[in-house]
Image (cartoon, rainbow, N blue to C red; front, side, top):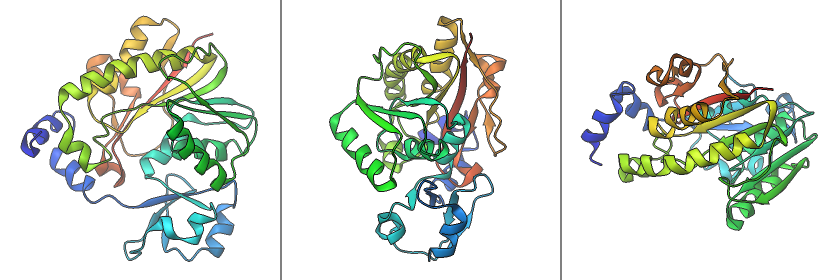
Length: 292
């Protein structure tokens, strides 16, 4: 899609010029792995020039004068940090993992949110990391080993056919998407038909993920894209077909736009995070509860 055509489409959601300017000038963030070191101790030993985020104590913005690859630092190799966008980090905070939970990450590789969930669980109880292909699980293993995650098992299953009925206290479905909020290449390749096609898979995955959730449990559905076909429409499809599904308030004080009310006023509970909000990736987040 040509840039002008894309900007016209994007303007139906947000200020396209501000969004794209912020998109092309995103800040670089990383997350301290609190399994290996408390944040306070990390700040005593690191040589990285960074500023702590006001939205998450373990999230840090790398200062612009740092011109080397963070993935080549000793902090990275020792598993003290994980490079991750701020908006991606915040998804796990919305999930709100507890140390006594049994949690499923449906599409866990390469492990950004998975590893954050493990840290928020304080490496306790059980975290299941699933993905579709062996190659993806291999990437997840690398993260697990580097960050010293101990409370986990991994599985290789089709996320649209998990067949784990009501086993988990919390579920994260960070769904495969067109990634319009995260990569310039995605903008160049994207078409609306692509969003509509992947939406079919997302709907099946959300049904499967919700089926795995215990009554009284909570599920986070997230994507790093803007298209309503991949976001509100997917969630709306679940709500219309499953009586026990309901949208919950997200209690995280961060800059965002509300979800699109054309699908119902309750969709204002969803968060649309555009690059101009946090100088970070674009994200959609919905919190869904299962009635008893």
